[in-house]
Length: 132
Image (cartoon, rainbow, N blue to C red; front, side):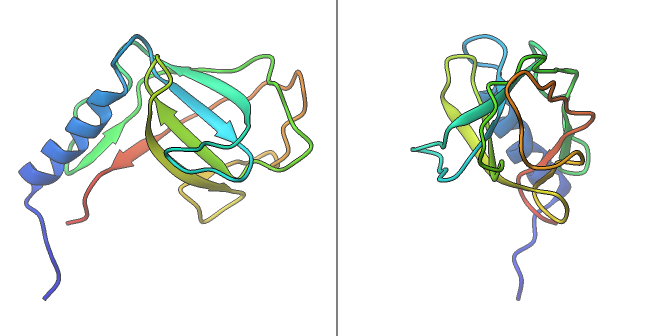
């Protein structure tokens, strides 16, 4: 039998994780090259800033990010972006996920290579902690 969670449990788990991003000021969405893990993130190529409250309250276990400020002067790198970290304002990584052109945790639509000085933006972002 598969494990299932009630909507209340999914909302509580999702809200608990996203609340961690609000610690120490506005959190960050950082796009990185390989290798990357929660404890040893890869090289940062673009850093976007979450609103003071990163995500709204979850509904049906899904939280939607509030406005995310673009990085208008990315550091850039010759290697392609492969990972992203969602972290506190103090730089503590809360979530690490994969990045690709499609079918990934985060999809980049204008290519995976970020050059120095590029503007990197995020039009929408959702987070789900548990499945139904």
